[in-house]
Length: 137
Length: 137
DNA sequence: CTCATACCTTACGTTTACGTAAACGTCACC
DNA sequence: GGTGACGTTTACGTAAACGTAAGGTATGAG
Image (cartoon, rainbow over all chains, first blue to last red; front, side, top):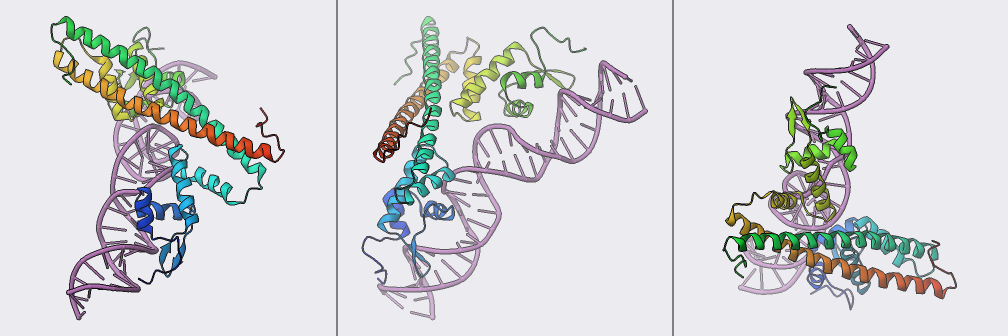
Protein backbone atom coordinates (compact mmCIF):
# COMPACT_ATOMS: atom_id res chain seq x y z
CA UNK A 1 0.00 0.00 0.00
CA UNK A 2 2.12 2.80 -1.26
CA UNK A 3 -0.76 5.15 -1.92
CA UNK A 4 -0.07 7.25 1.11
CA UNK A 5 -0.37 10.46 -0.76
CA UNK A 6 -2.71 12.28 1.55
CA UNK A 7 -5.46 11.96 4.09
CA UNK A 8 -8.83 12.59 2.48
CA UNK A 9 -7.71 11.21 -0.86
CA UNK A 10 -9.03 8.27 -2.81
CA UNK A 11 -8.70 6.36 -6.06
CA UNK A 12 -10.85 6.71 -9.10
CA UNK A 13 -12.86 3.57 -8.51
CA UNK A 14 -13.51 4.54 -4.92
CA UNK A 15 -14.77 7.91 -6.02
CA UNK A 16 -16.83 6.29 -8.73
CA UNK A 17 -18.48 3.94 -6.26
CA UNK A 18 -19.13 6.80 -3.88
CA UNK A 19 -21.05 8.73 -6.54
CA UNK A 20 -22.63 5.83 -8.38
CA UNK A 21 -20.84 6.49 -11.65
CA UNK A 22 -18.21 4.57 -13.59
CA UNK A 23 -14.50 5.43 -13.60
CA UNK A 24 -14.91 6.03 -17.31
CA UNK A 25 -17.36 8.81 -16.56
CA UNK A 26 -14.94 10.51 -14.21
CA UNK A 27 -12.11 10.26 -16.72
CA UNK A 28 -14.42 11.68 -19.32
CA UNK A 29 -15.11 14.69 -17.14
CA UNK A 30 -11.38 15.13 -16.76
CA UNK A 31 -10.97 15.00 -20.52
CA UNK A 32 -13.53 17.76 -20.76
CA UNK A 33 -11.61 19.84 -18.27
CA UNK A 34 -14.20 19.63 -15.50
CA UNK A 35 -11.91 18.10 -12.95
CA UNK A 36 -8.14 17.74 -12.58
CA UNK A 37 -7.00 15.32 -9.90
CA UNK A 38 -3.44 15.03 -8.66
CA UNK A 39 -1.33 12.15 -9.86
CA UNK A 40 0.71 9.52 -8.12
CA UNK A 41 2.77 8.49 -11.09
CA UNK A 42 0.06 7.78 -13.64
CA UNK A 43 -2.63 7.05 -11.12
CA UNK A 44 -5.20 9.68 -10.32
CA UNK A 45 -5.53 10.79 -6.75
CA UNK A 46 -8.71 12.58 -5.76
CA UNK A 47 -8.84 15.09 -2.96
CA UNK A 48 -11.71 16.41 -0.90
CA UNK A 49 -11.91 19.34 -3.27
CA UNK A 50 -12.18 17.04 -6.28
CA UNK A 51 -15.00 15.24 -4.55
CA UNK A 52 -16.81 18.54 -4.17
CA UNK A 53 -16.36 19.32 -7.82
CA UNK A 54 -17.74 15.98 -8.87
CA UNK A 55 -20.76 16.56 -6.67
CA UNK A 56 -21.35 19.87 -8.45
CA UNK A 57 -20.92 18.25 -11.84
CA UNK A 58 -23.51 15.62 -11.07
CA UNK A 59 -25.91 18.18 -9.72
CA UNK A 60 -25.49 20.19 -12.88
CA UNK A 61 -26.37 17.09 -14.82
CA UNK A 62 -29.49 16.55 -12.75
CA UNK A 63 -30.43 20.11 -13.60
CA UNK A 64 -30.15 19.25 -17.25
CA UNK A 65 -27.14 21.33 -18.14
CA UNK A 66 -24.67 20.14 -20.75
CA UNK A 67 -21.08 19.27 -19.89
CA UNK A 68 -19.90 22.48 -21.50
CA UNK A 69 -22.37 24.52 -19.47
CA UNK A 70 -21.31 22.76 -16.32
CA UNK A 71 -17.73 23.61 -17.11
CA UNK A 72 -18.53 27.32 -17.13
CA UNK A 73 -20.57 26.70 -14.07
CA UNK A 74 -17.61 25.12 -12.30
CA UNK A 75 -15.14 27.76 -13.35
CA UNK A 76 -17.52 30.10 -11.61
CA UNK A 77 -17.23 28.30 -8.33
CA UNK A 78 -13.50 28.18 -8.81
CA UNK A 79 -12.55 31.77 -8.91
CA UNK A 80 -12.95 32.70 -5.31
CA UNK A 81 -16.09 34.66 -4.66
CA UNK A 82 -15.27 37.99 -6.11
CA UNK A 83 -16.68 37.81 -9.63
CA UNK A 84 -20.00 39.53 -9.44
CA UNK A 85 -20.26 39.62 -13.20
CA UNK A 86 -19.96 35.87 -13.51
CA UNK A 87 -22.54 35.37 -10.79
CA UNK A 88 -24.97 37.40 -12.80
CA UNK A 89 -24.20 35.24 -15.80
CA UNK A 90 -25.02 32.13 -13.85
CA UNK A 91 -28.15 33.74 -12.54
CA UNK A 92 -29.31 34.36 -16.07
CA UNK A 93 -28.57 30.81 -17.17
CA UNK A 94 -30.48 29.46 -14.23
CA UNK A 95 -33.49 31.58 -14.99
CA UNK A 96 -33.46 30.57 -18.63
CA UNK A 97 -33.44 26.97 -17.61
CA UNK A 98 -36.34 27.58 -15.26
CA UNK A 99 -38.38 28.91 -18.12
CA UNK A 100 -37.60 25.91 -20.25
CA UNK A 101 -38.65 23.64 -17.44
CA UNK A 102 -41.91 25.47 -16.82
CA UNK A 103 -42.81 25.02 -20.46
CA UNK A 104 -41.97 21.38 -20.20
CA UNK A 105 -44.09 21.17 -17.10
CA UNK A 106 -47.10 22.55 -18.93
CA UNK A 107 -46.60 20.14 -21.81
CA UNK A 108 -46.34 17.17 -19.50
CA UNK A 109 -49.45 18.17 -17.63
CA UNK A 110 -51.42 18.60 -20.80
CA UNK A 111 -50.33 15.23 -22.08
CA UNK A 112 -51.24 13.60 -18.80
CA UNK A 113 -54.68 15.07 -19.12
CA UNK A 114 -55.06 13.78 -22.64
CA UNK A 115 -53.85 10.36 -21.68
CA UNK A 116 -56.33 10.26 -18.83
CA UNK A 117 -59.09 11.11 -21.23
CA UNK A 118 -57.93 8.50 -23.68
CA UNK A 119 -57.88 5.98 -20.90
CA UNK A 120 -61.39 6.68 -19.77
CA UNK A 121 -62.56 6.42 -23.35
CA UNK A 122 -60.96 3.05 -23.77
CA UNK A 123 -62.29 1.83 -20.45
CA UNK A 124 -65.77 2.97 -21.39
CA UNK A 125 -65.43 1.29 -24.74
CA UNK A 126 -64.32 -1.96 -23.22
CA UNK A 127 -66.98 -1.72 -20.55
CA UNK A 128 -69.66 -1.26 -23.17
CA UNK A 129 -68.73 -4.63 -24.65
CA UNK A 130 -69.13 -6.32 -21.30
CA UNK A 131 -65.40 -6.91 -21.10
CA UNK A 132 -64.31 -5.48 -17.74
CA UNK A 133 -61.18 -3.61 -18.69
CA UNK A 134 -59.54 -3.05 -15.35
CA UNK A 135 -56.18 -4.02 -16.73
CA UNK A 136 -55.94 -6.91 -14.33
CA UNK A 137 -53.59 -5.34 -11.78
CA UNK B 1 -51.01 24.34 -61.00
CA UNK B 2 -51.52 20.68 -61.48
CA UNK B 3 -51.56 19.84 -57.82
CA UNK B 4 -55.30 19.49 -57.60
CA UNK B 5 -55.22 16.26 -55.70
CA UNK B 6 -57.58 17.28 -52.93
CA UNK B 7 -58.93 20.13 -50.91
CA UNK B 8 -57.11 20.41 -47.61
CA UNK B 9 -53.88 19.02 -49.04
CA UNK B 10 -50.44 20.57 -49.21
CA UNK B 11 -46.84 19.91 -50.21
CA UNK B 12 -43.98 18.97 -47.96
CA UNK B 13 -42.41 22.39 -47.84
CA UNK B 14 -45.74 24.02 -47.08
CA UNK B 15 -46.28 21.64 -44.23
CA UNK B 16 -42.72 22.18 -43.05
CA UNK B 17 -43.18 25.93 -43.01
CA UNK B 18 -46.47 25.60 -41.20
CA UNK B 19 -44.86 23.66 -38.38
CA UNK B 20 -41.48 25.34 -38.33
CA UNK B 21 -39.54 22.24 -39.27
CA UNK B 22 -37.53 21.28 -42.35
CA UNK B 23 -38.78 18.98 -45.10
CA UNK B 24 -35.96 16.68 -44.13
CA UNK B 25 -37.50 16.28 -40.70
CA UNK B 26 -40.84 15.30 -42.14
CA UNK B 27 -39.28 12.80 -44.50
CA UNK B 28 -37.38 11.40 -41.56
CA UNK B 29 -40.59 10.84 -39.65
CA UNK B 30 -41.96 9.06 -42.67
CA UNK B 31 -38.89 6.84 -42.75
CA UNK B 32 -39.56 5.96 -39.15
CA UNK B 33 -43.14 5.08 -39.96
CA UNK B 34 -44.72 7.96 -38.07
CA UNK B 35 -46.54 9.40 -41.02
CA UNK B 36 -47.52 8.14 -44.46
CA UNK B 37 -48.70 10.78 -46.89
CA UNK B 38 -50.38 10.05 -50.18
CA UNK B 39 -48.38 10.41 -53.36
CA UNK B 40 -48.89 12.31 -56.55
CA UNK B 41 -46.39 10.45 -58.63
CA UNK B 42 -43.29 10.72 -56.46
CA UNK B 43 -44.38 13.84 -54.68
CA UNK B 44 -45.82 13.61 -51.22
CA UNK B 45 -49.28 15.01 -50.66
CA UNK B 46 -50.31 15.78 -47.11
CA UNK B 47 -53.91 15.67 -45.93
CA UNK B 48 -55.63 17.25 -42.97
CA UNK B 49 -55.15 14.00 -41.12
CA UNK B 50 -51.43 14.02 -41.81
CA UNK B 51 -51.28 17.52 -40.44
CA UNK B 52 -52.87 16.33 -37.23
CA UNK B 53 -50.38 13.51 -36.94
CA UNK B 54 -47.46 15.85 -37.40
CA UNK B 55 -48.82 18.09 -34.69
CA UNK B 56 -48.93 15.11 -32.35
CA UNK B 57 -45.41 14.09 -33.31
CA UNK B 58 -44.05 17.51 -32.51
CA UNK B 59 -45.83 17.68 -29.23
CA UNK B 60 -44.39 14.32 -28.32
CA UNK B 61 -40.97 15.68 -29.12
CA UNK B 62 -41.45 18.70 -26.90
CA UNK B 63 -42.23 16.23 -24.15
CA UNK B 64 -38.91 14.56 -24.65
CA UNK B 65 -40.20 11.31 -26.07
CA UNK B 66 -38.13 9.36 -28.52
CA UNK B 67 -39.32 8.80 -32.06
CA UNK B 68 -40.01 5.16 -31.30
CA UNK B 69 -42.15 6.11 -28.34
CA UNK B 70 -44.03 8.64 -30.36
CA UNK B 71 -44.72 5.99 -32.94
CA UNK B 72 -46.50 3.83 -30.37
CA UNK B 73 -48.16 6.95 -29.10
CA UNK B 74 -49.51 7.70 -32.55
CA UNK B 75 -50.69 4.19 -33.10
CA UNK B 76 -52.68 4.83 -29.97
CA UNK B 77 -54.72 7.49 -31.66
CA UNK B 78 -55.21 5.30 -34.67
CA UNK B 79 -57.22 2.52 -33.22
CA UNK B 80 -60.16 1.23 -35.19
CA UNK B 81 -62.70 0.48 -32.52
CA UNK B 82 -63.19 -3.23 -32.76
CA UNK B 83 -60.11 -4.98 -31.41
CA UNK B 84 -60.71 -5.52 -27.72
CA UNK B 85 -57.35 -7.19 -27.26
CA UNK B 86 -55.55 -4.30 -28.82
CA UNK B 87 -57.57 -1.92 -26.71
CA UNK B 88 -56.33 -3.60 -23.61
CA UNK B 89 -52.79 -3.40 -24.87
CA UNK B 90 -53.21 0.25 -25.59
CA UNK B 91 -54.72 0.80 -22.20
CA UNK B 92 -51.67 -0.70 -20.58
CA UNK B 93 -49.30 1.35 -22.68
CA UNK B 94 -51.22 4.47 -21.88
CA UNK B 95 -51.03 3.79 -18.17
CA UNK B 96 -47.33 3.04 -18.33
CA UNK B 97 -46.83 6.30 -20.10
CA UNK B 98 -48.78 8.13 -17.47
CA UNK B 99 -46.47 6.73 -14.82
CA UNK B 100 -43.43 7.78 -16.77
CA UNK B 101 -44.85 11.22 -17.13
CA UNK B 102 -45.65 11.53 -13.46
CA UNK B 103 -42.08 10.62 -12.69
CA UNK B 104 -40.92 13.16 -15.19
CA UNK B 105 -43.22 15.66 -13.60
CA UNK B 106 -41.66 15.07 -10.20
CA UNK B 107 -38.17 15.35 -11.68
CA UNK B 108 -38.95 18.60 -13.35
CA UNK B 109 -40.56 20.01 -10.23
CA UNK B 110 -37.61 19.03 -8.12
CA UNK B 111 -35.21 20.55 -10.59
CA UNK B 112 -37.22 23.73 -10.60
CA UNK B 113 -37.03 23.81 -6.83
CA UNK B 114 -33.28 23.33 -6.88
CA UNK B 115 -32.89 26.04 -9.45
CA UNK B 116 -35.01 28.38 -7.40
CA UNK B 117 -32.84 27.76 -4.39
CA UNK B 118 -29.71 28.29 -6.41
CA UNK B 119 -31.16 31.53 -7.66
CA UNK B 120 -32.00 32.84 -4.24
CA UNK B 121 -28.53 31.97 -3.02
CA UNK B 122 -26.96 33.88 -5.84
CA UNK B 123 -29.25 36.82 -5.36
CA UNK B 124 -28.40 36.87 -1.69
CA UNK B 125 -24.74 36.68 -2.50
CA UNK B 126 -24.98 39.53 -4.93
CA UNK B 127 -27.13 41.50 -2.56
CA UNK B 128 -24.64 41.08 0.26
CA UNK B 129 -22.02 42.87 -1.77
CA UNK B 130 -24.28 45.82 -2.21
CA UNK B 131 -24.63 45.02 -5.89
CA UNK B 132 -28.36 44.94 -6.50
CA UNK B 133 -28.59 41.74 -8.56
CA UNK B 134 -32.08 41.96 -9.88
CA UNK B 135 -30.99 40.78 -13.28
CA UNK B 136 -31.94 44.07 -14.81
CA UNK B 137 -35.30 43.07 -16.31
C1' DC C 1 7.70 -16.86 -12.58
C1' DT C 2 3.00 -16.43 -13.09
C1' DC C 3 -1.36 -14.80 -11.86
C1' DA C 4 -4.82 -11.56 -10.52
C1' DT C 5 -6.09 -6.66 -9.79
C1' DA C 6 -6.44 -2.18 -10.48
C1' DC C 7 -4.87 1.37 -12.90
C1' DC C 8 -3.60 3.64 -17.34
C1' DT C 9 -4.17 5.46 -22.57
C1' DT C 10 -6.01 5.27 -27.15
C1' DA C 11 -9.68 4.90 -29.85
C1' DC C 12 -13.61 3.13 -32.15
C1' DG C 13 -18.80 2.05 -31.15
C1' DT C 14 -23.53 3.60 -29.75
C1' DT C 15 -27.92 6.11 -29.81
C1' DT C 16 -31.06 9.92 -31.33
C1' DA C 17 -32.67 13.14 -34.58
C1' DC C 18 -31.92 15.09 -37.88
C1' DG C 19 -28.16 18.24 -41.27
C1' DT C 20 -26.08 18.38 -45.48
C1' DA C 21 -24.51 17.41 -49.72
C1' DA C 22 -24.78 14.64 -54.19
C1' DA C 23 -27.06 13.70 -58.20
C1' DC C 24 -31.15 13.65 -60.51
C1' DG C 25 -36.32 14.62 -62.33
C1' DT C 26 -39.80 18.12 -63.67
C1' DC C 27 -42.31 21.90 -64.11
C1' DA C 28 -43.45 26.88 -65.28
C1' DC C 29 -41.42 30.77 -67.37
C1' DC C 30 -38.85 34.11 -70.56
C1' DG D 1 -33.93 25.77 -74.17
C1' DG D 2 -31.60 27.34 -70.31
C1' DT D 3 -32.68 28.83 -65.54
C1' DG D 4 -34.41 28.40 -61.12
C1' DA D 5 -37.57 26.65 -57.73
C1' DC D 6 -39.16 22.63 -55.84
C1' DG D 7 -39.36 17.80 -55.55
C1' DT D 8 -37.12 13.04 -55.21
C1' DT D 9 -33.70 9.18 -53.29
C1' DT D 10 -29.40 7.61 -51.21
C1' DA D 11 -26.11 8.20 -47.96
C1' DC D 12 -22.49 10.00 -45.13
C1' DG D 13 -21.78 13.64 -41.21
C1' DT D 14 -22.77 15.43 -36.50
C1' DA D 15 -23.21 16.21 -31.37
C1' DA D 16 -23.66 14.40 -26.41
C1' DA D 17 -22.12 11.39 -23.05
C1' DC D 18 -20.35 8.04 -22.23
C1' DG D 19 -19.64 2.30 -23.24
C1' DT D 20 -16.48 -0.90 -24.41
C1' DA D 21 -12.79 -3.31 -25.96
C1' DA D 22 -7.57 -3.52 -26.84
C1' DG D 23 -3.33 -3.45 -25.11
C1' DG D 24 0.29 -1.68 -21.67
C1' DT D 25 1.96 -0.93 -16.69
C1' DA D 26 2.58 -1.55 -11.71
C1' DT D 27 2.06 -4.37 -7.62
C1' DG D 28 1.16 -7.78 -4.17
C1' DA D 29 0.18 -12.95 -3.61
C1' DG D 30 1.35 -17.67 -4.22
